[in-house]
Image (cartoon, rainbow, N blue to C red; front, side, top):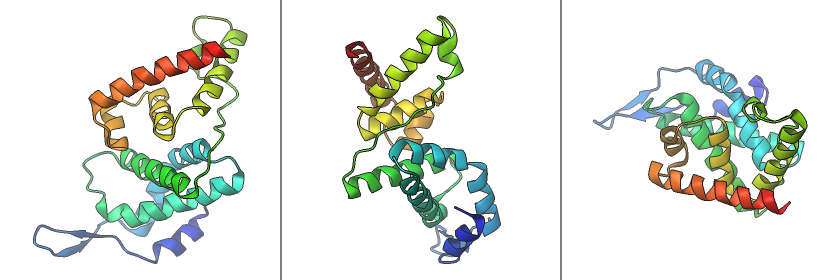
Length: 190
């Protein structure tokens, strides 16, 4: 989404914070501040869009929908977590809600080269083959499981995952263990 397009959407609603006294106070951040924060963290949105869409058009549509939802939710950002954590949560919820609403399944496309951390022990060809198998296996996971895996592969802490996904840390650990086991089985079958 171009900056000019964002401004068009942003003019629709100026974020307001309600105080404990029920007074409305404008957030001290301007539209330009919001746009700068979005621009600084746009990689998050592109990652989510790539994970949950299969065509460039769907990617662009979802990106725009995420920006709109971020703006609409901006007044609820209390600063209790990092902006990127809050943004992840809004982006994931928007993507998952959109998929459920449209009832479609997505083929996840992962990078052709595996992350550096997978390259340590064995040859590049072996690791590349393992990465391809893992990518195919991840495509078979459910929506929430994919989100957990993406955050895990980005080395997000379970506490950050809890903030983003709204799933408590103990449940995330259990889910991650089950996902790992599921991925082991799926990659052995191939």
